Length: 93
Image (cartoon, rainbow, N blue to C red; front, side, top):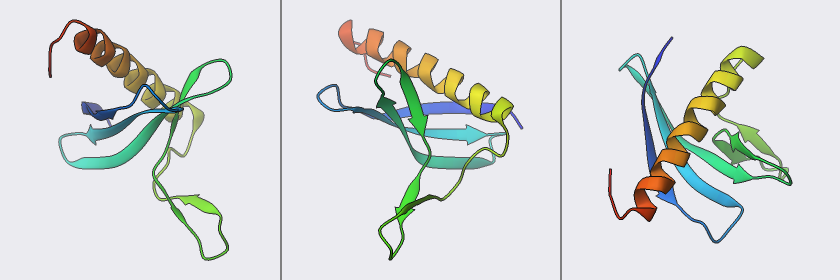
């Protein structure tokens, strides 16, 4: 399964949630609402989730193994950095 598109839908530099992202796989499946989060020492991604009646958050979709999670995070964070550079230069994607 290949990542065929990454769209940064919203950038918010004023909070710990830096961006909301949609990722398309094989031009056939899209996952919306992946978040770019500012952690204590680095950026990371959080998969889309929903709140259970008990108040816990459960992922709706998520990678099954670390290789996929690492590839997904690497590609999303690269696209996020590119979007920040474009925004600073006054460009839009």
